[in-house]
Length: 314
Ligand code: RIB
Image (tube, rainbow, N blue to C red; front, top):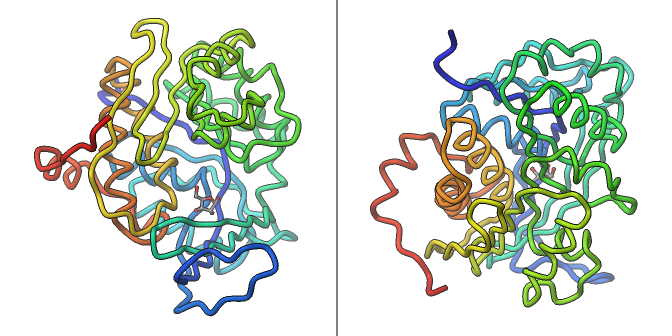
């Protein structure tokens, strides 16, 4: 018998080209950046990396180009303890790319060129059905084709797996069926606004939670940056978790690490509130460091830091 729960991440892998500047440029504005770094990223790969570094038995299913970027992403995941044996290598597609600008307050703007990520099909999932059958929970996001996400979530649910959905980036047409498959949906506040159509969603979180519930959604966990975390759950009702007091350097991958930490803790048997409190700590550590996978801590680092963490007023 396995002692650790097995997490399958189905999703994207991108090589991030990160430019640091004093602010993120406005439309039509030209600014000077300070430097450029190449960092392993992609929402799916970041989640797999975080789950692996936290100690989960993690496997990733996603597509890469046969190129140097792909190999760099593979080795970053392997070094994080992720099973990379099912990554799919495409001959005629380049590895996904993300152009990221990070401003001095840690804010970012991201443009993704999907490349090989766009080639992950329903058939790829069917061919790797044993991965879904053999895991305890599946994490999905939306940087791969939306039909593939729906198929993966549907299959995982039909096999009795826990399904965690990070609905990022929110597509123009978000498939309603996904609400019914996900055990937990984890948007940030911008994504929650887009999903529900509620403007100023930060001040209407309970109303937004009601909209998600009426569409068939189960547990909802919303990351709110400096305003902490909002939870609407069957067991806990409405809850808030205060943000950890940190100096934000770069928020990239904070949401991805949150999702992975939440999933891992849930699968290990923690309740949603406890899992979200842990995920809140992990994502707070991520924002204090630069880059995507370069910023994701190990379980040991989180444990060592845990008692020193201070919280902002709720
Ligand atoms: O969530 C952060 C990630 O979004 C980056 O690593 C980038 O690749 C984009 O996918």
